[in-house]
Structures are given as structure tokens and as C-alpha cells.
Length: 263
Length: 90
Image 1 (cartoon, each protein chain N blue to C red):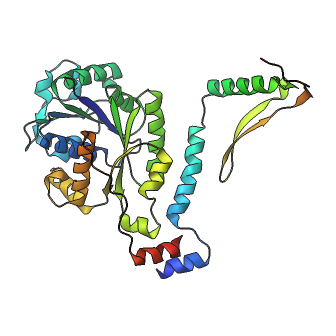
Image 2: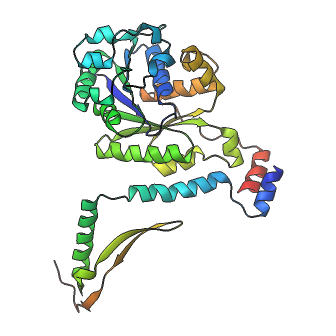
Image 3: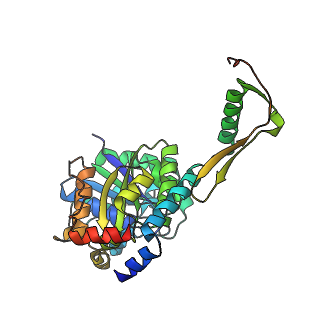
């Protein structure tokens, strides 16, 4: 049976696409699914360092497409999970080294072998984006609670819909609950009402994310991390498990007072 | 906390509220950034609808999107030559 192909995109750079791919891929692999993650950011690859496999790269995505190696030769097995693979991007090539038809063909072939094919999309809406999106059935749009990220996310959602990719989900990254409470950051509800796309989950802003990327080990390996928990829930929801979104927080008397002051 | 009371006293909005309102307008404007061919089709549809009720001066027809501070509006300016007594079924 054919697996699911999912692209993670955002428009704006630096909102956490690669971190999202690394963590969701790891969660799904921990659930015993076979997973391959493709870094489609040709020229600016980073999934390899986030996953901590940067020293083991021999072949890359462009080599597969140009027929310089077999698919299996370019797939790097994860350090911890034997059913998780990474296809790194080429670092010294241009985005034009690959075209959307080639990506589509590769994704279709990989979906025959794997339960999940995750594609890490480059920032921007040019050819790199076109390539990354071409082979995907589902899109996850990552945004942060900032005006620039939300605007770009809206643009990307428009482009995906124009490409008839209708299965689109939203992840809100780096939400700072303290700032939301103070009225200094847009809330989850604000962002959903602006973008009008179903929410897959919210990742709280956390120092642990930086620490885990420093080590090249996805956050979901640490137990007790709030951001890691959020990624686990997102992975499970993506897998069709019914896990309620826990948006409402306990409202204390102090919150009521503050809300009165700020409203 | 004190800052917030001062802010409220002077009628200043919380920044998240400002951001939300700005995004509502910006996103609407971005989404309304309609391709020229679709804009042309929209214009023709509006003319066709109006023409059932009135005779228009076709040379003067203008249809634009206007961006206000808190809204985006579709402004159409059409000079009417005469209004029919009964609507013309198309």
C-alpha cells in the first residue's frame, strides 16, 4: 500500500520547518512506521545537521535524480531508529538541478516503499518550493505568531490551494503563552481565524529546541519536554489518532484582572 | 502591570490586538490581489448584471480595489445613461 507524502512549508525562513520535519519524522518512526525525510532545500541543506548525520553523507537528492546512485545509496539511516531515513539535499548545486516532475516521480516511488515520506521545503515561493510541493498529497504550513510569518503563510496557503493541494494543516511554532496572556502576542485563536486552516498543533517557545539542535538529536527523544510533547501529539494527529487540542488554559483570578486591564 | 494600567489609561491597545487588526487588512488585500484576467472577468460580470436594469456608458466604467485603513473595498464607478422601466431578462 502506498504511503503518505507530506511537505512541510512556510514561505518565510527561520520559522522551524526543518525542526518540524525532524521531530515529526522521529515521532512516526518511534511509532514503528517506516519513514523517509527528504531535504528539498538544495544549496542550503540543514536537515542533516538537525538530525546529527552530517558526517555520513556520500550521495544526495540530486545524485539520485541524475541517476548517479541508487536511492538506497543516498538514504542515511538514523542513529537511533533503524526505520527512519534521511535523503540529504545537495549543498553545491542550484535549485534548478531538479524539476517538479522528477520530484513527483521520486516521491511516488518512495511512497511505495515507505509509510511516510516527509519533504522539508525551502523558504520562498520559487522553484525550490515548486519542487518540494510537486510530489506531496498533504501540506503542513508552519508559522510563528509574528506578522511576517503569518502573512507569508497565508500566501503559501493560497499557492497550495491554487495547485489543488487541498489537504493543508497548520502548525504554530514558538508560541509564548506569557506574552499571549499579556496581550503582546497573537493567540492561537487569532492566528486560526486569520489563516482559516485546520490546526495540527502548537509548539511552545522553548530553549530545549535550541539545545536539541545543538546536539543533533530531535527533541522528541527527551521525555518531559513541553515542546517535545507538542511534537509527539502532532505526529499522532497526523497519523489519524484522535488527540484533542488543549487550547484553553486554566484562567485564574489574576488572569481575569489582567485581561480587564489589557482589554 | 503598571505599564499596562498606564497604557489602558491612555487608551492604547495591546500590541497583539493591533497585530491582529493589521493582519486582517493585509491578508484581505493580499488575497484580493487578483490576476488581471480574473479582474476583467469580474468587471464583465458586473457590467452584465447592471445592464439588465440600466443602460450604461461603457467607456466610463471603472472597477478598482480600494485599500482603506481598516477595510478593502471594491469601488465601481459607472455612469448611467438611463434606467429601464422593467428589467431586461438576459
